[in-house]
Structure formats: structure tokens, C-alpha cells
Image 1: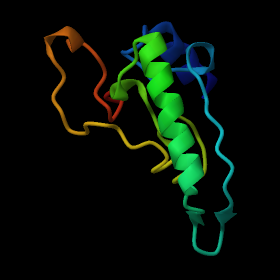
Image 2 (image 1 turned 180 degrees about the horizontal axis):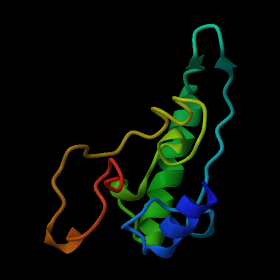
Image 3 (image 1 turned 180 degrees about the vertical axis):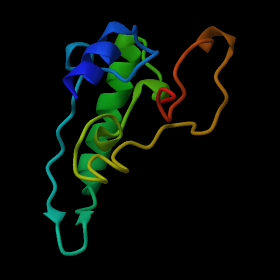
Image 4 (image 1 turned 90 degrees about the horizontal axis):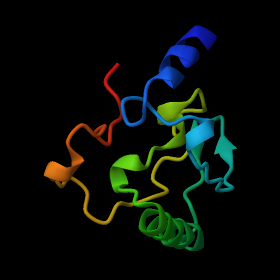
Length: 110
């Protein structure tokens, strides 16, 4: 696993998933239910806070929705962790010419 991490970290973003050294992790408290293998739905207040935070981060750091990843998509976490917390403003739009070479929202190809 460390060898994969070392190889991945040598690639420039966006040719790889972001790592701890060049990303921001956002913690949202919710309970995991092992019996159903599901997480609590975010409260309306949590969803609103995430969307306000993402708007601010995107505006201040020049990020797009393609720079946003759910936690379980980029690390070994419980499936569904982070799912559905952020709703992009305009999902499904094709990137413009200025985004050439960027990693698609689904992440780097493996």
C-alpha cells in the first residue's frame, strides 16, 4: 500500500487523487448503522453549511466541482462515508476548454 501511495504522490494533481498534503478534509458528524450499512442523512443545517463552505472554498481557491471528492472515493473508508453531502450547482456540464487535462469528477482513471 505504501508503494502505491508513494507512486501516486509523485504525480501532479489533477493526474491523481488529492492527498493529505494538498487537500482539505471536511468532517460532518453522522452515525453509521452497521445493521443497515447506511449513514444518517445529513440534517438540513449540515447540508446548508457544506454548500456555503464549498461555495467559499471554490471562490477563494479557484476550485470547481471536479475538485470535490467524497471521502470513500479517495481513501479506505466505510462505503458511503461522505456520500450526498455536497450537491454541485450544475452537475453534468462538460468542462470548457480551460479545463483541458483536468481529472473528471469521477477521479483519475486507474
